[in-house]
Image 1 (cartoon, rainbow, N blue to C red):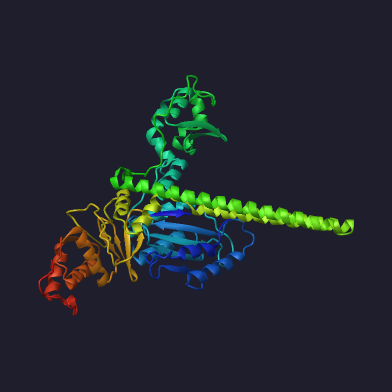
Image 2: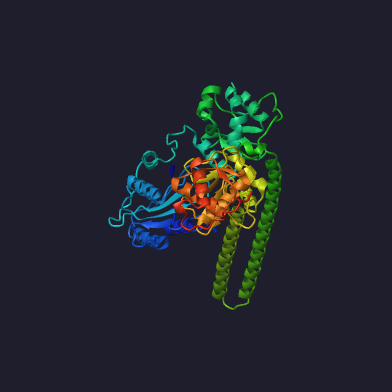
Length: 539
């Protein structure tokens, strides 16, 4: 598991807004399970009431100027589904290890992504002392605590050591995970970095970059490498520490922006937007990518048209304000008395300035909102198409991050065909969520079934009805021979459900297959009056 402390935004943030965001199900029944949003060290266990209590505590400390709320996320490995008791232990140990054991906090568990993750909204103001706690080296401490918990609770291990990557490289990878598109940083590292490092003079470096459609420019105290076509740029030192301005000047001499004296060569290659990872080579991906670009161009046109209308509306209102101002001045000239006319002029001027300032401010906000709202990136677009039930979009999503599910996770799969196949969509069952890896989450009441492609995953305490639905999905996907992973209790439930529905399937796990046959024959005491069709199993 990995723990991350979310950096605060400029000016800090409201604990109530944070809790509202964390507890918002966003229309997804699978996002927050029952009892998985609660408060610790508060008078009320309700997250909303607890957030108000935390806010009141924070208001009692008027001296602290830094952000009074810490937002901490703990993410578990894909497929890992810790028990409620384990999650409580993780939350309490991390809070105590960072010094927040006695502090108020709201804990919310989200299950609508590939990785189950736990959010903590922690009040940094002590409820009794009213002092603020900003633990030093908190990121390093968090890594150490997570590593200890992995060993103690037998959780899948993550690497908590420093990666050695530059800040820019980490930022590029974060962007790629969010958008699914290859960043300029990654493209330069893959296509150009070796040639850049071989340059023995500034002329050679300029020429090498020009062949890739790039230029190097001074920016602040350092250098950037910019793509001429798109205008995107990256810090040179984010590609390689040896490409800092000081490093390059030590190697090539004093920097100068002069281009090669023998002319600028025509680009032989160039950066272009494309999917990041293996999915860019799939036939389905190429067709979807073109469709995505068309959707993006349409959205951009709609945004540009909306911005144009907003600017025209602003100019029209300002023009009307000018006319009203001139009319006020004209009326003032007809009034007797110099001081009266001056007072009217001054009043009209104040009204005009306030009115135009309000018009411009409102217009600026509207245009900013348009630019922020009208964004389209590859991965979220794929998810939205998969949400509609498009199998080609689900196939591409799954190609991004195919790996076998966590072995201890309650799941149904095939040993003979472990590769992700076409989704076993259920027309009558509404898709609740499609994750970034193409996993489809169906919600059945308070339970969820996750179709991973290579497996069908369930909750630890899935009901018999949910197990039967999952078995039907698995039979459609994998055929009549299935392999089950999970606890002994879960395996017994699966055997019982298979017998109850009489689905005509067999299990690769011999102990589960034997139990299924016992249930089917009515010879198992665990049947407990279960009604089973003892006739011939349906094929």
